[in-house]
Amino acid sequence: MNDAHGMNDAGVALSALTTMQVGGVPERMITASTQRELIDAALDVWSDGGEWLVLAGGSNTVAADEPFEGTVLRVATRGIEVLPTDADAPGRVRVRVQAGEPWDDLVAYAVERGWSGIEALSGIPGSTGAAPVQNIGAYGQELSSSLVAIEFLDYLSGEVSRIPAAELELGYRTSVLKQGREGIVLTVELDLHDTAGAQAVLGEALGQPVAYAQLASALGVQLGDRVSVQAMRDAVLALRASKGMVLDPADRDTASAGSFFTNPIVRENFARALPAEAPRWPLVPAAADVVVPLGTTVAGSPLDEFLAHQADLAASTVDAAAAASAETLVKLSAAWLIEHAGIRRGFRLPGSRAAISSKHTLAITNTGGASADEVAQLARYVQGRVQSEFGVILHPEPVLVGLEL
Image (cartoon, rainbow, N blue to C red; front, top):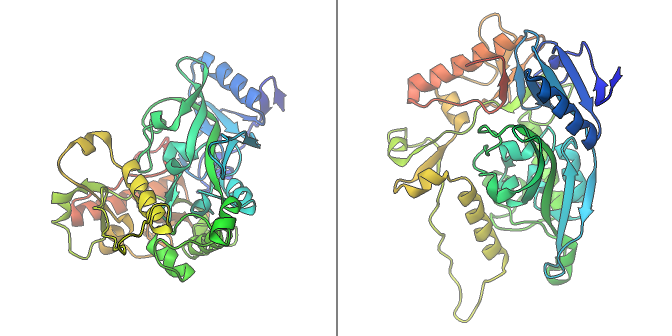
């Protein structure tokens, strides 16, 4: 059924639209396939003053089994537009992407054209518009390294504005959009590197330096080495698939919301009390020592670019208040904490159809017919075990709708 602002999808349950496959039927659902439809529908819904929820790919949403008493605004906009670039910045590509464009479709589009900057983010499910909300990241890359700006429809003002990335307060899996600024991301603007432009200098079209040890091992290279963007994408997709993190209808481990908990960030003094073997990463790493022959410059070399890239990633994850403090913050491995709290892959509570992934302890999966309550019960159990064992409270990464942990 059509209305003035999009398609009215009555009777469709959120379980059919989310990768966790749980959630009740909303009171009303409007699917907008154009930016104009999305703006008009949102303004109309907001004028009524009722509850509302934005949904696109559904990969980061876990909704309650009870009906959602409000309107779901489903973002189905599509489109990738190549923008004019500055003549003083050769080898760069600027793109504007509609919020409903599937994220991995965008990555594939960029990789096919030899554009570098998001290839390590291959295989991440969900929509492009959701990417800045979470500041998605994986295998040594974060969206913040490529994000230029977003177009945003603000809930309070009802106005559309362009917000530069610097104003989004992007951090580890967070932004001002996740922390309470209400509205809808309409488009995402990215700045990417055209590897073909560097081919004459490097001899081949290479992407960004490899910045993650597991990925380097899978590629058979060293940290800081460079490979083609296609090789990087292929390796990332294989790694993610081995962990059940690439959607596959034949693999129940992929019926999840990806990593259910974020990696905890704690103070260094607290981290010292944890077992010595517990993985940890300082958020402001000391500069690496580099041995260079006299008279040799490394400016612009792959190693120089790698170190600069690592510094950019570290800076993007530091909370402003914490950065002002003299104490170093440390990121822990949520997966390690879960496993060493006694929760193994494939674990489930008695009689529950929700389980820890058989491939990766950080994911909670729907083994078939699980309810949202079963998912929440398992998540609470995991939280309790980790807190009891290590004194660390794990925080959920997905958006919880009508659920509490």
